[in-house]
Image (cartoon, rainbow, N blue to C red):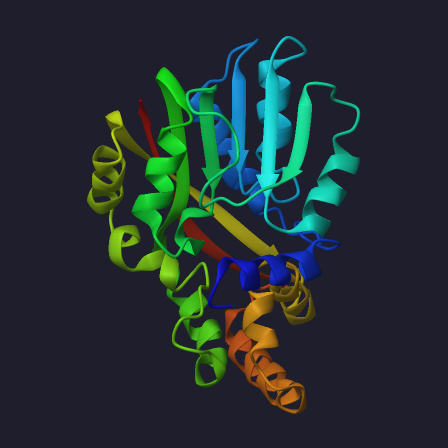
Length: 270
C-alpha cells in the first residue's frame, strides 16, 4: 500500500463492510468535523475522501436542497455504495476522484472537509495546497487527524509489524508522525498552505467491541485491512492468535473491549 492506488484497492475491498460492523467510529469522528465547520444552507461543500459518507451525509443535510455537496473518493466501490446510500438527497453528488488533485474548478467551494485522509497522501503539503485552492475567498477548511493514542492500539498493531513494508501508509502509524505528531505541526501545515485563522479542537472517540471476534471484524472493515493483506495468507492464523492473546487482558467486567482515540480537528479560512 505504497501509493494512493494501493490504498484505493484496500478501501475498495473494504467498502461493503466499511463503518458497518457495529462499531461507531468514522461517523462520530466526522460529525465533530461537521459541527466545527458550521455549514449553512445553500453553501457548496466538498468532502475529500468521502468513504461511505460519514461526513458527506451531515454536510449535505446542513447545506440543504439549495446547496451542493460533492464527495470524492479514489475507491470506485466506495463511491458506488455511497451514491446508493445518499440517492435520496438531490443536493449530493459522489464521484471517483484523486485527493491529491481533485478535478474541480479552483475557488468553487465554500467549505472543504476531509476526515482521516491527509496522512494517506504521499505529499501532504502539496495535497493541502491543492485543497485550499478550491475554496472561495473566506471559505472554510477542516481536516481530521488522530491525536494522542491509547497505547493498547499500538500493542495490537504490533502484531503486524514484522510483515509491513516500510512505506505502509497506515492511519495509526503514518498518521502519528511528522506533521501529524502535534497540533502545532498540523496548524503550520495549514498556514503554509495559505489558511488563516487556524485553530485546533480536540475530541475523543471510543471503539467498543463486544468481544475479540468483533475487534477482528473491525480490523478488516477499514484501512487496517491493508495490514492484514500484507501478511501471507498462511501466516494470518498465527497473527490472529497473537491478537486474541493481546486482547484478553483488555476485557472489561462485561467481557467487552473499549479502546479510546483522541481526534484532532484543524480548521481555518482561506
